[in-house]
Length: 351
Image 1 (cartoon, rainbow, N blue to C red):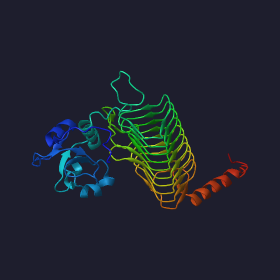
Image 2: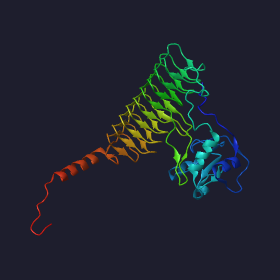
Image 3: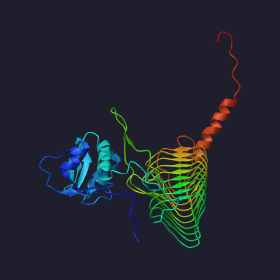
Image 4: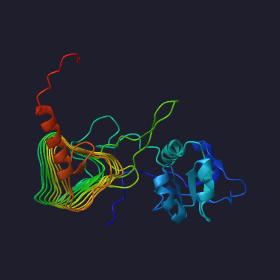
């Protein structure tokens, strides 16, 4: 059965309604009265969707988009393909944040356990809990939740609205799982936070406009997530944690991150939004990635190192900014040799 999603979508809206709501202008002569029903990334948008371009890096996707309309800055208006109507704005990302708020008016607040603020049962009567699943006293299970046989929800955990948890999985005390689909054999240690909105703001001199986050977190089978780790839900796409991946304590994973199978992520790692990791990637303690980069299959990033550019498959990287490990090691050795030199005694007349 297809998951119904976590947010109710408003609309459809006419181009004029959208333009008025987001402070954009419909390109002259192009408003053909069409109505748009959703918002989508450039690469996934169909004729009923509005999308946006805010980074030159995605111009190739703009050239091939099938979006019904696209929010673009004036300098990129001519790049919008035939069939897509330009919505022209000086701040496309800020306008897109307003479009998300228009289509998803309830997305600014996470619907964790439902209810109307007047209390109610700790396990919602609409939740489906298979035989053999255990919900300990004090755990909160929200509306339309599904929990598979053999799973255990520890005391104090919160399982939010419409979350699905597979079979033989464990959610530790005081963990929070919202806006997420969790597979079989998953271990979620105490204090983990899964599915809260990502750190998304359209920055500007008039203030930092919050961007609604309407994606999900998908956690595949046999993943283990250490205590007090946080995994943000996607903005439009899903945040994905691949099968068999092991994540240590105190790790931060931003929105839209796609992590491959059987990765090992050690404590206090920080992974910025929209980064992509291949299979069997290893990240040492306190290492990090900037957003929108790709780490290839089997790559390793040493503890305390920070990558700012794409990392090739199989590479071993170290340092800040991260570079090939041997190069980094030579630099460290050279600095050590330099530091070990005895200072030269000044000769007469030298100061």
